[in-house]
Length: 59
Image 1 (cartoon, rainbow, N blue to C red):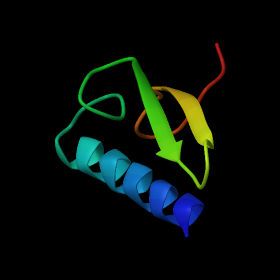
Image 2: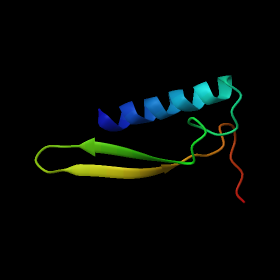
Image 3: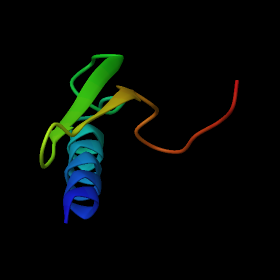
């Protein structure tokens, strides 16, 4: 259930940003890292970049 949990948490962060009137997701930071440890020596790392909290337009 790793992936659904992460998506749920990211969606909640987005919703909180909208409620607080922030223009981007997160806490005003542009970059973040998502790290997961698995069985054995498995490590999964994902770089995250903040985006617009409401709607998306390409530049």
